[in-house]
Length: 132
Image 1 (cartoon, rainbow, N blue to C red):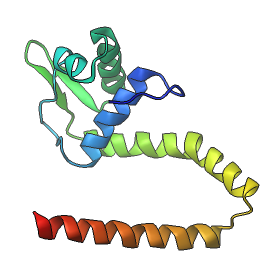
Image 2 (cartoon, rainbow, N blue to C red; image 1 turned 30 degrees about the horizontal axis):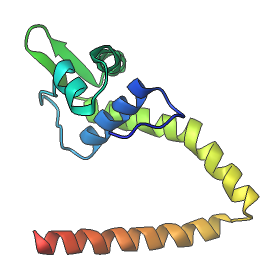
Image 3 (cartoon, one colour; image 1 turned 90 degrees about the vertical axis):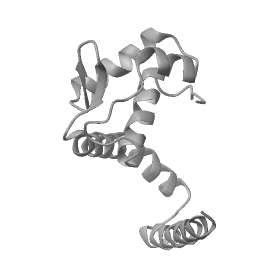
Image 4 (cartoon, rainbow, N blue to C red; image 1 turned 45 degrees about the vertical axis):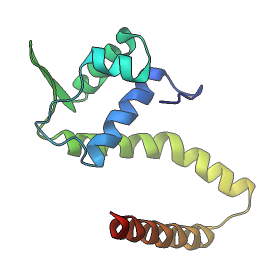
């Protein structure tokens, strides 16, 4: 994992977990990697990973079965979606709107670019499914 300087590492790890849940790589009831496994895999201190787990547990996204491990909560995907949406609206959208204003871009411009993005995503998705 490559870490950015603009956000705490434990939150970046939480974003990685949330992405796996939203992409349905991890589903409700699935056991997630242990603190130690994650720390080794992403080369960070286990205390940092533990902080991530505590954060996600406070948000109701994961839960702990003592002695067994951590699991995705039954409504983990819904809570993950809500958390990511809130973060996007409060943190990323203001930066995005500021950039739009500075660059004199309109919502019509953004709509055009978004449609192009979706078209490219569909094309790359179709290509990936035919080569698999």
